[in-house]
Image (tube, rainbow, N blue to C red; front, side, top):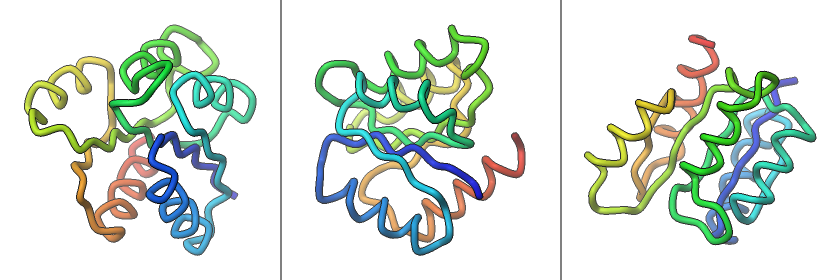
Length: 123
């Protein structure tokens, strides 16, 4: 079974994404902030990570830099979710860090599932 880690500080959105992915047949691990997400990634070694960018304790870019610095986690496909209005800067910074997809909030669940499937195919 494919394991997906969802790192999102907005609990309602995190719960909706977790429920959707569980319904779609994924094994889902969740984290409420970047530090917790980094710990969960190291503990579970998921097949894919979905992360918000703006979060307390450690932002999404910090999580991604930490994962990319570790040989065990550096190749895990990574999708960013963000509500930030300046997505151009985030997209450029994210691609420099090796992000597979960039999904802007609000998004449809079909958009998210399509991004997940595309990232898993290319990994």
